Length: 88
Image (cartoon, rainbow, N blue to C red; front, top):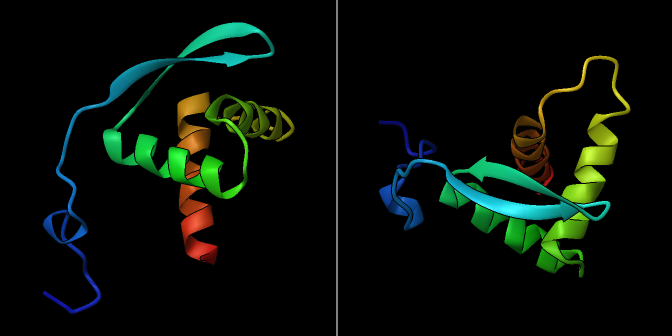
């Protein structure tokens, strides 16, 4: 395996099924199912940006609705987190 290929074990996380949580978007409860690694990344991103997870999810939701063919919210969150990781 090439050195640049990380394993889940090397990241101190394991493979796990999605976990459903409720978030508030514009005062409305919304259920989101994300794998624990994505929930952790979302919490870290929210902390880095000094805002609650609910506020960050609302921002991602608003941004996804501006595109011509918006993905579902869970997909938008994963894409936002991956893009954030790519830019460092």
